Length: 229
Length: 229
DNA sequence: TCAAAAGTGTTTGGGTTACACCCATGG
DNA sequence: CCATGGGTGTAACCCAAACACTTTTGA
Image 1: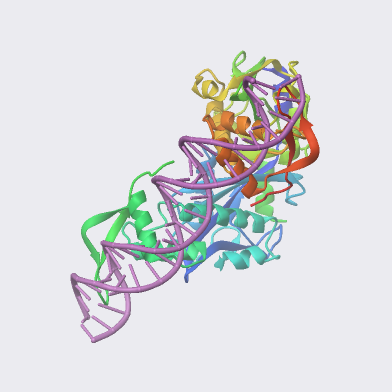
Image 2: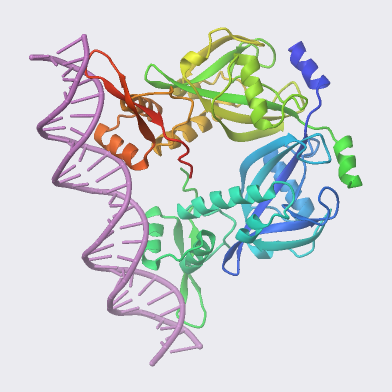
């Protein structure tokens, strides 16, 4: 083993490493982000993205760490997670001289988050992303992280790459369109939208499955597997 | 301060945090990546991306850490750096039970890297990216990281977002096109390429500055400032 | 006079938007 | 019957690719 690097590892302190979760959903026709109110320092009482400490004794890798944090804080497991970025600097977090956060994004149905908060969070709420990003009261640099998550998500929906796990097992094409409109923040043309869906083959219809309602029943679809780039 | 989190910070060990650099250039008409041969463990004698340990006593933030590593290892300062991702898991690096790497990409002119390697590297070489990505002998998961860097870089050049600092102060439009062709790996149509350049206003001509050569002199250009999205 | 540099022009096609329609269906 | 679901058709537009061509210029 390289003695000098080994020495560095043992001699030099490592940063305080945390995971932060930007969890998005569509609620009331708007793109919203999950915020929790912190009970402890730093920024006690302020709203922030849910997060937790990386535990090298518990987490096999970064993805697993994000999942564990979601479980401990919110009692849920996330369908598909996407790493957004890592941010780190000195004085970022008063708990440590140097703090590094790895930020993940996931989209999920609002119902999956129970109202009962977990450890170190006394309240949870969905907040429309435009309000959250304008909120100067957000802890740390979380407003920028939300901005990042929103941008990525808009690009995905715009390219018809829908995050698996956000939509229920079966859904109608109108569901897809309404969600896309909420995420993108603008109306879409039904005809064009469906043509694009068809060309990209993102959804396959479930034979015979219909959603009945007040009017004509709607064909149910599933997401086609792996339209990877 | 939150006692439980403070306890976690002091009680739980933190991962071994490193910075890795994916440095790209265009050489011999091909996109190439800088690899160094390791002198120490792990993977002594194998080629890998240059990197170094994050030093919380020296680095103000992640960007500064990447710059310091470039300076110590290669004796250069990088013009523009882009964070690609963070990777981390247990058993990733034999020097520590849990290793986390933050990966940065930069593009620079090949001449900026002197042949004389720095600490813990006994040789440096530019390697065409397609060969590097196919090389199973690369240390750790560096082949995947290179793949990631190449993808991002191709997208940038394809969208005419040229990394500042890669091109010299002044350049010709043919320079731009040749570099783009090398990065993208395919020929481009001069007429279309220049129309796009013009529409996007990415380059402004330097009045009166010409590159003289064997034939008709070529107009020199500079990158237009900040075509940010 | 040669060949690179620069510029002009047209055609073609893909992809998307916008808009106007059509029919089907269950309550 | 009516509002929703599902679909057709089409003109317009933007963007980029492809191709052909002319002019300029220094050695």
